Length: 467
Image (tube, rainbow, N blue to C red; front, side):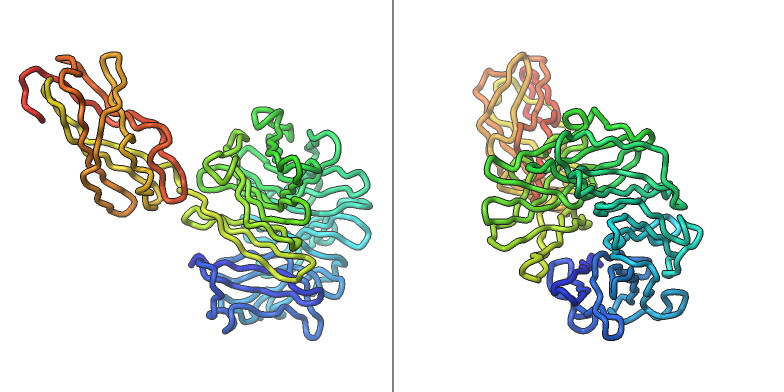
């Protein structure tokens, strides 16, 4: 349905689960009001992360009474009492600590990551119905020993291995470790390529790569590893690290990372300038370069605020738009923002039907160009300028005077009829000429530009009639 489900703790003692429509309005089909408190009897819970299972069942993790807890709700927000092996909608585990992140293996098993009370990272596994899997790690939990470790994120690979990122608060260094599907620590070594202070806060996996997002203490950074070996992928960014400047008077941090439908990297966090904070989304190409078609220099920002705001999670909607969720730890409210993401499935393209033949002394010819958006999004009419098309041939590149004389939109295709005027005698007999789409012309509504391309050709013949 495209609904947006958000879990959080808007006050120090109350967990909250909220569902919005795809347009950002509270969905009153969920619990009658769009939200519900998360409690265990009289004990308030801390809601940290959420995922959607088949049948639109909602699994939430967090903590209550200093223990890791899991909840499952039906799509309408009511308690799912078939959870925890039929024991009820909540599993009050015996695991002491706080859960932060949920992941899911291919069989539906739930992976929960967090911290215990001694500065250790804990990773636990449950069945899809919320029962602890004792065969994972030691009695259902793997512990990465500290002290002073702060778990930040996990990602499940296609082979069900689990990639975990965490920070050491005493050394100010980010770390990556991988567990097998059954919770044993993988022998692969992941080296942090950032010299000096660093934080690793978010992780995602894609095919042969592991992508980590964080900060070098000042600027947002993204690191890519080769999954099979754990080596830093030096073909990415600069020696494996992509860094976008936060500006001379600002600092930035990234907290979560994901991929869009085009394989580009999206990371979200916060930008701080003096007393102002802004939610930040950064988009990189698959090679680690800033995607300059997004925001300013690859960075999109919400309006500045004097509140302490940060973005804690990110998701891509089916139309390519980007939703981030976060809030203000000091102001006790949640914030949802959406950024225009661009076409899922590729950039717009342009094609032209065969143009036939024009006579040498003709000063005018007409042709139609069809601009296509792969995901069916609209083409931005304002980018269809009179200089969108050039004519090439016989060693020359002509910039003819042109006029758009007709437009017709059908779904994700915009058909444009152009009339082009060239001075008589420009063409050479028995030569072929091409129509070229100019640079930085013709975008979809989210700013993805069609690439420069040869649209089609036409021939010139003496004495022939206009085709």
